[in-house]
Image (tube, rainbow, N blue to C red):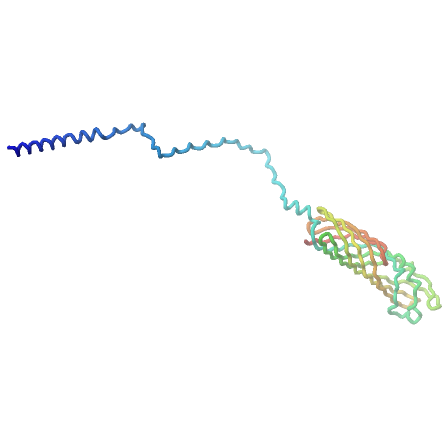
Length: 276
C-alpha cells in the first residue's frame, strides 16, 4: 500500500513538471522587436554619406576655333638659323682691282729671248699692270666654331683691258721696239682667319686674308713672243654680312681692301650652303 502511494506521487509530479516546462520556456524568451525598431550594434560603423556631385558648368563653344600656338622648337630653330658651329661653302661673283706694278715678273720662255726680252722691265709698271680691273669667280670653304671663322678659298680673277692701251715703244737692249701686252691672267689661293656675330637669320663678319697669287702674262716684242710669270703673297681685310633664306641656304655680300700686295679692293656677291 505504501509502495503504491509513492508511485502515484512520483507520476503526479512528473506530469505537473511536464505541463509547466513549456509555459516557463515561453515566458523566458524575449519578444521579437518590430521591423522598424531594431537596436543598433555598438560595434557596427556607420557608412559615410554619398558625395555631393559638383555643379554642372555650361560648356561655352567659341564662335571661331582658336588657332594652335606656334611650336616653340620651330620658332627657336628658325630664329637661330645663322647661329652655332657650322660648315659653309660659297660661290659667287668677284669684282676688283689689281696693281702689279711692284710685282717682279720673270721671263719664262719665248722667241724674244734672243733680242733681249729677258731683261725687259719698263712695260710692267705701265697699263694694264698698274691698275687692272678684274672680274671673276670666287669659291670659299669655311668652318665656324665659337664665332671664329677659318677660311680657305680660290679666286679666278680675269683682268680686263684694251690691248691698244698697252701698246708702246720701249728700249729693248738699246733698240726701240714696239711692245704689246697680249694676255694677262691670275689665280689666287686664299686663307683667312676672322670672327662673326650671328643674330637670328643674319650674321656679320670680318676676316684677315692672306693669299698666294700666280700671275702670267704674254708680251709681243716686234712680233717676238715672250712669256713672263710671277708668284706673290698679299694680305687684305674683308668684312660683310650673311642672310639666311633657308636653314641650309644663304646669300652674302662682302667688301675687301688690300693691305700689302697687289690687291687694291674687291667686292663679292655670293650664295652658299650651310651645314650644322
